[in-house]
Image 1 (cartoon, helix red, strand yellow):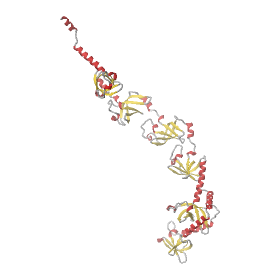
Image 2: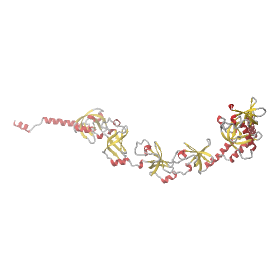
Image 3: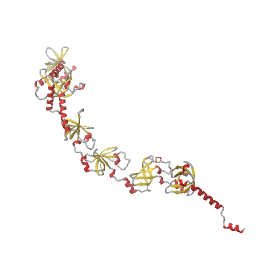
Image 4: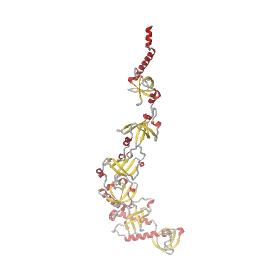
Length: 565
């Protein structure tokens, strides 16, 4: 708010800056505005007729002349005349039409008030500031009627107003710059007040920016992006990110308009005349003491302040906010939304996992203070257990199955004895599936599962009808550095090592070639079959020899018979 001293100093400088030519111009412009009305005489008249149908009143102004006065100038809010026929009335002759004078009651009143103002105006006194509405304009400027009914001429150079339709009716303040007692004219300036106000505000702003001490301000308006605060007559914006050390907050949830708050000036944009204020800069920084109070690994109680799809913001209770990422809420990896686990206002225990004092960021974990599902799993399960779990994820390499609070991997190789069948062919997410725990990796906390181990394997079936040294037909399926994988009947796989190929060489074989081999051994526990090609010839030789011996067998009786002969 511009004080009296500021107004006086600026008004004096403004008037001193105006040379005689300026004064003559103001006077001539005002006189021109009066002459445009082609009248100006104030006379005493008598109301002789009321014509509401024409919105007019006839007034006898002497010299056998009856002037026309607009009826709506002398009615109250309900449309009732303030005067009666035969009442005397003071009017101004505003001009003539067909030799009949046009009259105005309001202009007569304004002129009387101007005359009275001019008569009592003290050029050496304090500056006079008026408030009113712009009621008209002319070539040189605008006509302003003050709240007291005083008409003032406002030159365009002193107006700081755009000449638009909305200017008429605009409420403004101005300062009286010049009074012409001879012509009963008043010249005002809005420019003086505006420039003085700006200068005073600039002085206040410079003082705020140069001081390290916080000051008190009054909240004038709260918006979604911050609050406008009045500091000693100057409005500044406290952005929502400058309210709390927690980060951006909703000001309407913390403050009310009219409330007094501590603020500190943190910047000023000269071009936009924009003052930036901060509440958090005017209050102690809680992070300064945080290093002495907490460290990574500490467990603290916090309150959930905000929930987002990607995580939860928690309040430590001392204007410090931490962030709980969605991955740190639970050991369950399939969290869809944090709101399914937590609610705003809920108090929880968390562990501090990261503190960045430079960026003033703090991360916490909820799952770190909860029992670890893998530890609980180890207490109640062991390798070889058969359990029922639920399929949570299907991948190209298998399926993840949830057992209690942990997940195990059911690899495609362990889904079925048919190597062409994969997890996605048999299972879908949400299915309950019975599996066998085949491995628990304690170091990496991983669990391997098998579904096919619960079924009779093809090798077990094969072992019921075959035994070592049986000769079988085998088809080459794959060739490796250490041997050749072959396929037997019913899709059973077997291995022939290079040293068991005999005269055949691995490099001479192709996928799909058929071989004759003997069963070296069948291991149903490990589901393995080993074959040998070179063993085939020995077995066949032995079989032939046995057969020959059977055909040429000589008994003791045959020998005695031969000797007796």
